[in-house]
Length: 269
Image (cartoon, rainbow, N blue to C red; front, top):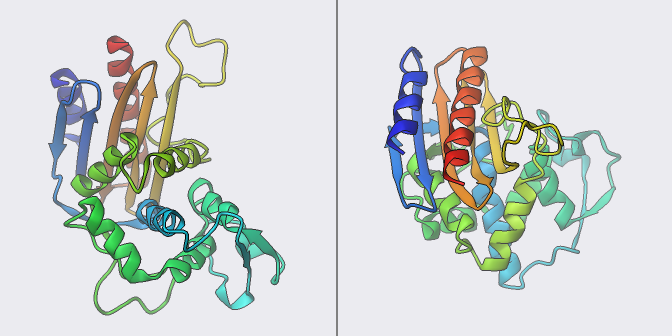
C-alpha cells in the first residue's frame, strides 16, 4: 500500500482544500489514514449510518421492508431525489424508500426514514458502530438546523462503519449484504470510479471487472465519496472527504484517486 499512499498524497498535494482519507486493504490488513479525525460537513454521506439504523430496526422486527410509507406534501423537501415530485398520498414500501435514499440520494426519503427510526436511534447506531467523532442532529434541507450541532463526519469513523459492513459485522451478516447490494446500485458514478473501465463492458482491454458499493456527498465546496471497492477477490474500503476546494478540481482528484485504487487492486488479483 505504500505506493498507493504515495500516489494519493501527490494527487492531493496541490490542493488548497482539506482532505480526510482512510484507505484499508481488507485482504492484507494494511491501512493508510490522512486527517482521519478531522470533522467535515457530512452532506449525503450521513445517509449510510441512517440506513444502518433502519436495518437495525428491521433486525429487531420493529419494521418490515414491506411496510408502506405514505408521502405527505408537508414532508417534501428539495435537493436531490424524485419523491418530492410524486403525487401526495402515494405509498411506497420501506425497501423502496431506503433504495431511493442511497441510489438517488433522495432527501425526502432520508427525512422520512429519520422520522421513522428517530434521531436518538441513529446516534446510538453510530456509537455502536464505533463512530466516536461524527455527529448527527439534523434532518436534511431544513431552514432551521438543530442548535445542538450539525451533521459532521470524520474519515476514520466512516472507514470503521464501512469495514464492518464489508466484513458482515454491521447490524448482521444479512443486513450488511443487503446494504452493500443497495450501495452498488448508486447512480452517481462521477467521483472515485469515474475514469475506470465500465464494469458492464466486454471491452476492458483485459482489465479485471470491478464493483463499488458507495455513497457520495456534495454541496458547493464540499465533495465526498466513500465505499467498498471489489476487484476480483480483493476488497478495499475507501473514504475520501474534501472541503474548501473548487468543485471541478475536487471531482478530478477524486476520480484520479479512484483510478489509482483500482490499479493497485488489479496488481494484487
